[in-house]
Image 1 (cartoon, rainbow, N blue to C red):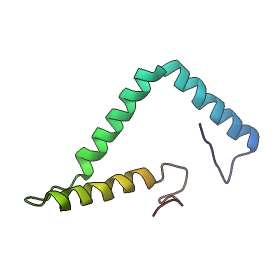
Image 2: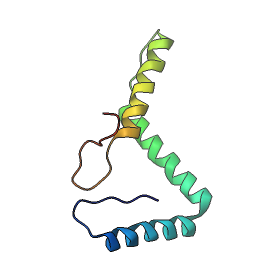
Image 3: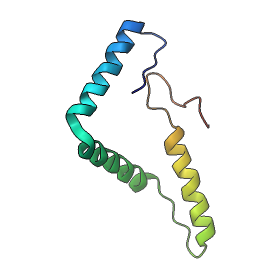
Image 4: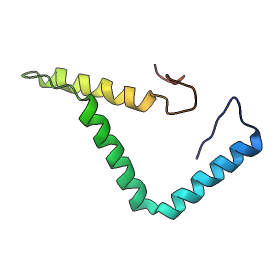
Length: 85
């Protein structure tokens, strides 16, 4: 687990990370896997672009979209992560 904040204290961050770890243990491997699958399915359902007739171009577009999904911020007050974009 990883936590970062520009506004919360270190003890609050430690508590956040500890809670994330406890939640992951409670959810278990299969639950985490199912949640990740659902998240990715939702992303692809809303962001996929289909290119007819050009498999290489299709793969390149989806590869780019995958990287945007990976690099996009899901953090407090951050629209764009400082990694990859």
